[in-house]
Image (cartoon, rainbow, N blue to C red; front, top):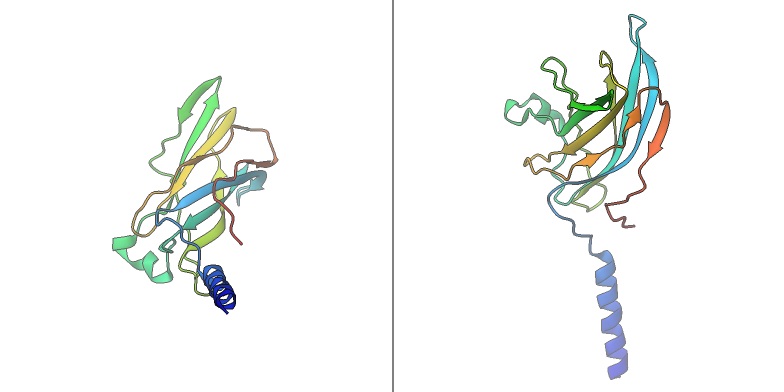
Length: 178
């Protein structure tokens, strides 16, 4: 009888552990996945490079991304994707600073599925690069959640100006669950 009760308690405990949602830190975490490069043409028939950065994001308390009402609210009107661009020209590395063009952006909020309170997603962010003279280019980026908690910073590899295609990162920093 004691063995049956102990077995029943063990089964109930195991089922409880299975139904418990995973716990993640409230500070966002990002993990660079890949970068794709292709040519694009603007309305004036100028050819320039389109970079698409793909990365995973995980925010434990789910307060990441802009809801529709947030983009109209001046108190929360900030970018949540921030990027620095570095170029290499004649083996000299320079950080691009431009007061007229910002490559930062806003990533929208996505309603979590089921009872999950965390935000977990793969983001594809496009950067249209033109009027910059370089031999190779590199991107460093991070995200902010609505509480303005800063994520880790991720860095792409150096990409030659003439490269077209997709480069993948082999490091997987965010643990997969499910």
